[in-house]
Amino acid sequence: MLPSITLIQGGAHDGQDVDLDHRSAGGVRARAHRRGGYPSLSAVVQRGLDLLRSQTDAEEAVTDALRELVRQRRGGAFVSPTDMKGRVDRMIRRKRREHGVEG
Image 1 (cartoon, rainbow, N blue to C red):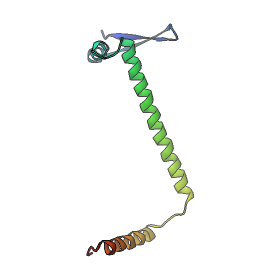
Image 2 (cartoon, helix red, strand yellow):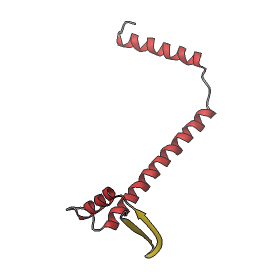
Image 3 (cartoon, one colour):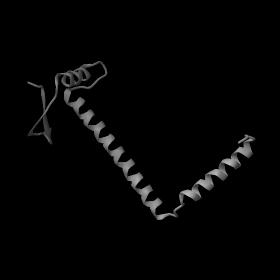
């Protein structure tokens, strides 16, 4: 049988348990009792949930920023692949001249 942690929300047991494998349960206990660690098993689990929430929030912020970038790009002027190649080739020639590089 796997060890479990009972979730209590707002001071009342909501009937949900989280089952941990022995390795995870041992890790939670070790962190809770390590010098300078967490005061309780609950604190370890809470910290893990806080970290997960922060990670999720950060991922959502990146996704939102990328969506906005794509939206802006779609609204901008389109440069054909041929035109872009010409622009890049001219930039490379200019940079080579500026830096005295043979090409």
